[in-house]
Length: 224
Image: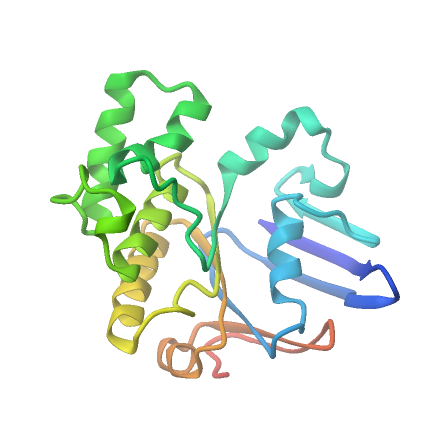
């Protein structure tokens, strides 16, 4: 369960990214964050992994108050909550399998346990035949699938996706969305920031729309 209570975020020079927003996301939900660039979507995602701190208010993940979480607990938070970036952030000198394995290395998994998880994730993201490829040998859509695989291999309860289809053509975007939808059906909570009107309107999931750092719409089975 994710809970934002009266959360604000102000950057320097009075740049207000979020202003007193509150919402709750239940376990297993699929939620779109929509709104124009600068509306506050990415700020919400960064707050959820404690990459930044709020100026005011409280953020909860289950029993944890994220903004008060000690630094030593951050690795545990980021095993529960994983963020997929628009620009992938893959390690170019590592293979697909090795990129996915990074999360498991950090968690201290044994080689046998790690390999079993990697093989399973490669099937989920439909890259079972490309584990030994390097990122430079892949299409943009395939690189995004590697990034998703790396995010879920550690059994994260919550998958955050920041414009995961922003750099992709329509066909590839739908392929990525199908994978994310399948991950949600396995029980993972998904929070996806997107500008893609067609995707939001087609899936009819919950939509939290932001404008100038405020929530202007929060509706289930909604459209952009």
